[in-house]
Every structure is written in C-alpha cells, then in structure tokens.
Image 1 (tube, one colour):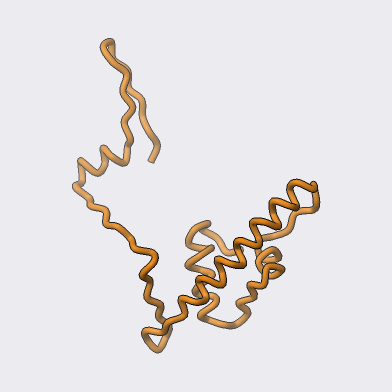
Image 2 (cartoon, helix red, strand yellow; image 1 turned 120 degrees about the horizontal axis):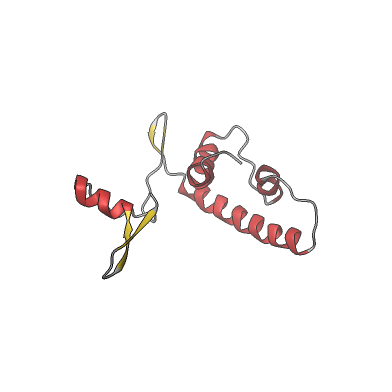
Length: 112
C-alpha cells in the first residue's frame, strides 16, 4: 500500500495507507521468529533446516559473484545458473526444493 500525502492550510501530513487500513479493520500483526522454524514433508515433521543454511551459504556466494560480474562488466547469468555454480543443486530432493521455495520463491515471488 502506498503512502498518501494530504495538505491543509495549517500543516502537511504523510499518512501510510496500511496504517489507516489497520485502524479501520483492527487487523493485528504478530512477530515471526524465523530462527525457530519447523519443517515438514509428506510424512510429517522432518528436520531439514540445515538445507536452509546451505541455501543461504550458496546465495551468499551468488551475491559475491554477481558483484564481481557487475564490476567487471561480464555477461550476466540466471539465478538458477548462479545458484548451481555456488553449489546449490536441489535436483529431485524434495526437502531441498522446499528449502529453495522458502528462501527464494517466497521472497521473490518466482522461482530462480
């Protein structure tokens, strides 16, 4: 939601539309503790949070490579290629695919 600006003779105020919507609807927000994540698959609770860390490590390498590519004016590559070159290759591993969805698809709204 975008901010709106209203001006009167006496003052100028900036209102956040989401804040106004909150007051109108009384919708509450709760804190999300991303350091305490439980993972599941088709059989129930399964701990594969280590794959979230592995993805983060690969993504860090990808970011460093992207900076180098930009500074050296080299040909850009896709996220998928960058992740693969950084060591992230989920293949048919459903847990790794779920970790990728959580870390990338959910954040960017599309797959790499």
